[in-house]
Image 1 (spheres, rainbow, N blue to C red):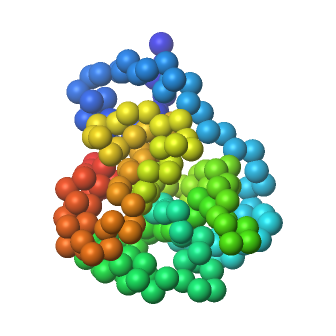
Image 2 (spheres, rainbow, N blue to C red):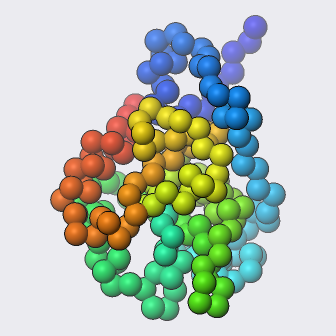
Image 3 (tube, rainbow, N blue to C red):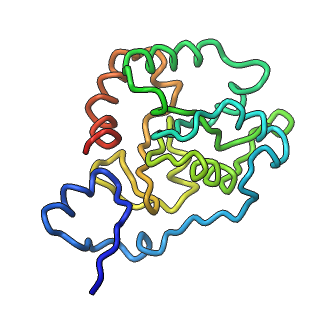
Length: 191
């Protein structure tokens, strides 16, 4: 039987290297398959997606998202959120191309509306291997499968890390940085 290369999530690589060729997953996890069929050029999507795409660093190892990101990418961003992320990113010191922000929602009047297909298409175009979500909304919207930690899940070849809601982390910057270093960095940067 011919062997072909497989794009593995980093936390699975040591298992594969030690000879394990298959894992038993729950049936719902085996068939989980997000396959959005959208135009592959986000600059051609309806507004505000082209505006969001202009800010993307692509390719990027991780996509960071949170419920209010669409608002923060608009004309009136929350300065507290901006400062929080600047401090986290600076504290982590990850290399350029490691982080980009991509929204799960878009504004519609005063509300935010979820657009899962555009979110997943953007993640695919960005070529991310990991989604970092501040808040648990993705757990309710996507067919996530259990991963190696209670906050880590799988979605096809993506690792999804669900962190606490942004509002609960704003005053805990040193703890958030340590949490990233302990939980997220080994998933993203292990070789």
